Length: 431
Ligand code: UGA
Image 1 (cartoon, rainbow, N blue to C red):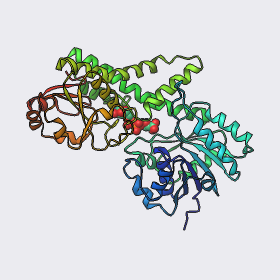
Image 2 (cartoon, helix red, strand yellow):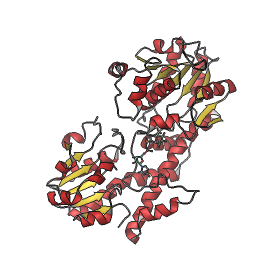
Image 3 (cartoon, rainbow, N blue to C red):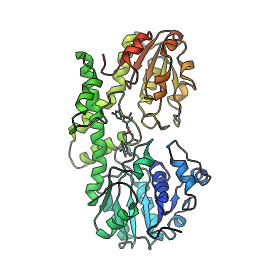
Image 4 (cartoon, protein in one colour):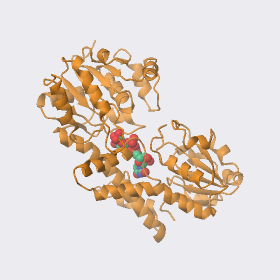
C-alpha cells in the first residue's frame, strides 16, 4: 500500500537532474511520471534503459516501476499531479545568459493542471526567474498554485547518493504552505531542510558552484607559483586544507574544471550581474584562470617535445571527470583541438566517455586499451583522473613508447615512481 504521505508528482525533463529527481522521489514512495520531449529517450527509459552512466540510477528506476513512469505527453504527466517539478536544461543563449525558453514552455503546459498545489523549479536559473514564473502562473489563472525554488546540489557520478543523503535541501518559497509541502516530500531524506525566500535560494545555488570554481582556480594559480618556486602543490594544499575553516575539498590542481554545470553557471552568474551593471571581477578572473589551464599544460609539453608537429600524442581520459561518461565542456576537447591544430596525431583512451560531437573527435583515434594507444607514442597526457591508470605497468609502457614523456594533468601518478619507470614526467605544480 502507498505511504499516506506520498504524493503524485510530474517531473519535466529526463536529463541528469530530472531522472535522478524522478527516480529518487519514487524511491521515497511518491508516484512519479517523468515527461520528456524526445521520443527515443522516453521509449528507452520505459524499457528501463538509462541514456547515460550514473551509478545506482538504473537500479532505482528498475526497482520502482510500480511508482515511476515515463511519457511524452504533458497532460498525461500532469493528470492527478499535486506537484510539478521543472528539471529541463537552461543552456546559454548567444549572449551568455541562461536560456529559459524550456522552463517557460513547461510552465505554459501547466494550464491543463488547475489541481496542482505547487510548481518546484530544480533547473539552475537566474535570480528573478521565480518572479517571472509567478507572473506567468498568475496570468494563466493559476494564482492558487504555489511556487518553490529547490536547487539541486548533486554531482555527477554520485547524484543518487547526493539526492538521498544531501548536505542540505534548499527550499525557497514565499509562502509557508508551499515550503511545508516541498519539505514534506523530503521527509524520509537524510538531510536538513533550509527554508528561505525564492531569490536567496536561486542565488545560493549559483554561489555554491562559483565558490567551488574559485577554490579550483586558486589552487591552479598557486600551482603555477609552485612550478617557479620549486614548491609542491599537493603538499601546500594538503597543509592548507587541514585548517577546518578551509577544508580539503576542491583544492586539486590540474587541467581545470569542465562539465555541464561549472562552465555554464560561472558565465551565467557573471552575465546576470553584468546585466545589472555589476562587474564580478573575482569570478571573471576565476574563469580566465580555468580557460588558461589546459593551454598552459600544452605549452609546457610542447617545450619539452620541441613542438607537436608529426608527434603521436595520447590523451588518457576524455570525460570531464572520472566516474562519468559526460564530455560536456570537458578540458579534453581543448586539449585535442590544440594538439590537432599544432599538427600532432592524436590518440585517445577513456573507459566510458560518450562522444556526441564530431569535432574534434572525428580527427582522433580512440583505443579500448590504454597500452595499445601508448605503444609507439611520443608523449601522453593524463586528462581525466581515471584510477585504472594507476594500475598500469608504467615501466613496460615506457619501453613500448617512441619517447616516454608524460604530462600528468591531474597529478594522478607518483612523480618518483614515474621517473623510476623511465619517464620524463611533468605535472601541475609539482616541479
Ligand atoms: C557540480 C557541483 O559539484 C555540484 O554540487 C552541483 O550540483 C553540480 O555541479 C550542478 O550544478 O549541477 P559536477 O559538475 O557533477 O557537480 O562535477 P564536480 O565533481 O563538481 O567537478 C567539476 C569539475 O571540477 C570537474 O571537471 C573536476 O575535474 C574539476 N575539479 C574538481 C578540479 O579540477 N579540482 C577539484 O579539486 C575538484
